[in-house]
Image 1: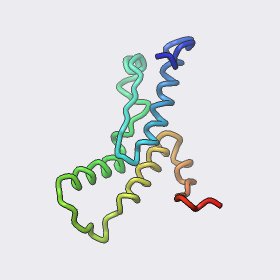
Image 2: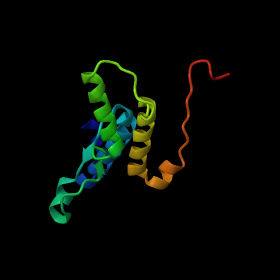
Image 3: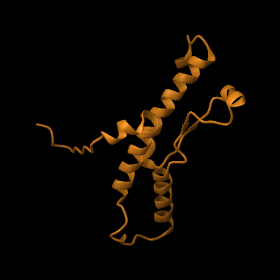
Image 4: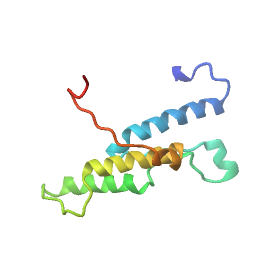
Length: 120
């Protein structure tokens, strides 16, 4: 609540909360976590719309289902036609970025991997 002190109205508080939820959604997409953020006051006037809904993205659902499957089944080799977990995580993160910032932004992203000792 302290982070929201000094805000002039509920709308400004909601916008700040939505921004935090969007950043968390991007950060946690690789874990298959979906977020839903809906303005209660806006829902009464316009309908039941959400400003942020990453729960319904196909890549998030695919990652959640893959993790459920891995928990219930002993480790076996995955078929060659199945995406690796890293690929699914990258896809989910790109989908959430596209949902938050627009598909044009997500199309311009390039994968970047770095490890310890890669920096001179």
